[in-house]
Image (tube, rainbow, N blue to C red):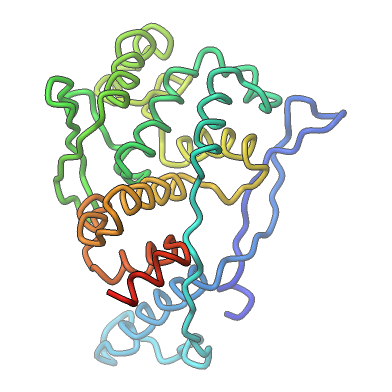
Amino acid sequence: MLNYVPRYSSEITVIDKEHPEGIEKEIIRKNSKTTSARKLATLKKFYHYFNNLDPSEKYYITNDPVSSVRQTKDTKEPVKYLTDEKTEALFNCISTGDGLIGKSAKWTEKTRERDRAIIALFLGTGMRVSELAGINIQDINFEKSSIRIFRKERREDTVFMSEKVRDTLLSYVVRSRDEIFQPDEESENALFISYKHKRMSVSAIERCVSKYTRAVTGSDEYTCHKLRDTFGTRVYAETGGNAKKVQVAMNHKSASTTLDYYIAAMDGKEKENAFKD
């Protein structure tokens, strides 16, 4: 368990002289303290359930390999987000392809409008990657600048777009979606289509975002969720630190989640004023 919980395997694309188009390679990565704790908590729940079945039940088990693993309380790290300069550089990278290599650079011209729409939605609405992947064409109301999405536990919700985000999305739908990506019959309702003519999966969207954020930041840390965090910190700043508005915008069930994340976005002066107030 001590080997399993803090690690996971991941595939990366390695580009060198022998493989200019890139080759997939499996590597072992370390989970953060938060992810390790969540993984361990899930396993504890799993074994607790089967340990507490009636002994006559078919799936009753007596061993619990997790019980001896001590779960330490994690301290929250400051939220990571893109600055305004990095955000501008991100859209410039999509427009020019600067910094991209291999297949990423090769497909940029065809996927530019789609990729710009994906990143604009993350930065402009703060939706989760699973929510974005599930959007259908009929979920979008361009007149009202709104999109119907399904949150966790399949809860239906509506998010609203700024004029710029709406225009970026409309440009992709009108000019690129059918003409370039040509969705197959199974994916004809999906909003975002891969070059294989199918609905983009969560992992495909994550790879799409990572290739641009990696080119701009030089790091693999700025994932789809970090774009969501960027939206959250921006709402926090523009509402003068109104945690309730951030909670609504981010669709956090608990206000404590909002505070854990965004209190870290305060600069020193804001903290000083908050304590004085």
